[in-house]
Image 1 (tube, rainbow, N blue to C red):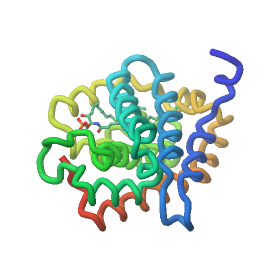
Image 2: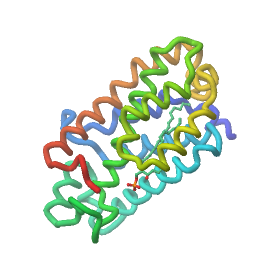
Image 3: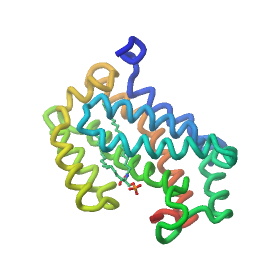
Image 4: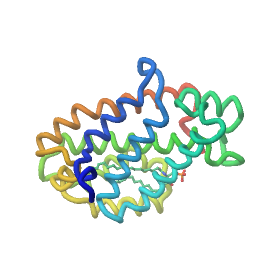
Length: 215
Ligand code: 1Q0
């Protein structure tokens, strides 16, 4: 690990979600949103290869979005609002079943958005739990209350087994590179609202356009 990588802390990743919101919190910059995700994936990778099936999927979705940003309609993908308007008005979204647009930006962001809910719940549980709480239980509870509702049985099963390999709460806190357990709790309290604001904005945008159940 290089010196710069060692200094990398979860605080910076979470705070990076702050820079997603623009226009008085009325829009989200896709590039910054993806940056937040790239950081989260790095943390997940540092927990070991057991989660590579998860990070592969996240990386794949980040890549799909990057390709849109680099493509000839890249400007239309600059923010979530412009992406939704563009894809819907150009009929680029499979609305009821997967068809000719299986990897639309709208459905790809929706998958990440649902995962952000899991992150919110999980980090909040970590923040408010006691020192001897089991991270695997906290993680499973967060998962069951969010992402699990969208996953088929086989993924739910695999995820539940992988959670058992999660390190104890203190090791988790060390990997975050923030400081003492107390520092972590403070940092999460301070930084999580940025993630929540991004989540809430996206949820509202998708709900207005009836996009919350995209196949
Ligand atoms: C820290 C432990 C990580 C546990 C992650 C929990 C989520 C489990 C999810 C299992 C996903 C399985 C892979 C495939 C799923 C896809 O089928 C599904 C739907 O997509 P599609 O195209 O088939 O319709 N994909 C998803 O639901 C997206 C899943 C993305 C999950 C990304 C999770 C990123 C997590 C970041 C972890 C940050 C850790 C922060 C704390 C670290 C502190 C040291």
